[in-house]
Length: 161
Image 1 (cartoon, rainbow, N blue to C red):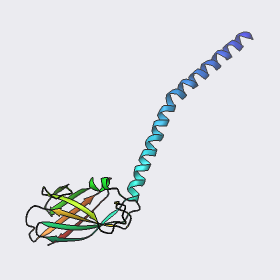
Image 2 (cartoon, helix red, strand yellow; image 1 turned 30 degrees about the vertical axis):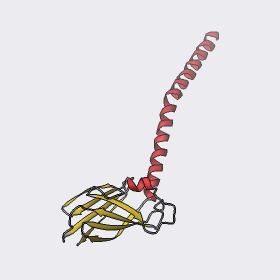
Image 3 (cartoon, rainbow, N blue to C red; image 1 turned 45 degrees about the horizontal axis):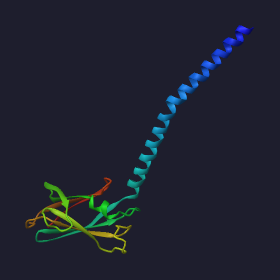
């Protein structure tokens, strides 16, 4: 009888130790997985709230003007707008333009918020004017422009001059 008690006690202690080791090994992994899901969910939510639509284009000599509207539910700070990628060129020969607030080194682009409410952020329903300095005379033809925001949300348009 006493040997059975000792055996059961040893098995119970072994089970408790195994359970503790299992919890110690598994809990950090569960915590890491939860953090990843939370982070991914936040980024997905940010992408869902962000949207842009190109609404018009015009040209003048070596400049192209593109108007884009923030059609999402998130506002974009200046640093987020400046990290935007702008692609422009003839439909079969376009390239990425660099951001340059002074338009000093073609090809480049800058922006201004057309109907800013004074907070220097691209708010919901506000329009930005993207000025693209091509560096040479823009000739007649079909052109492609694409605006890709810092988080990958984009809009593209093809237009003729």
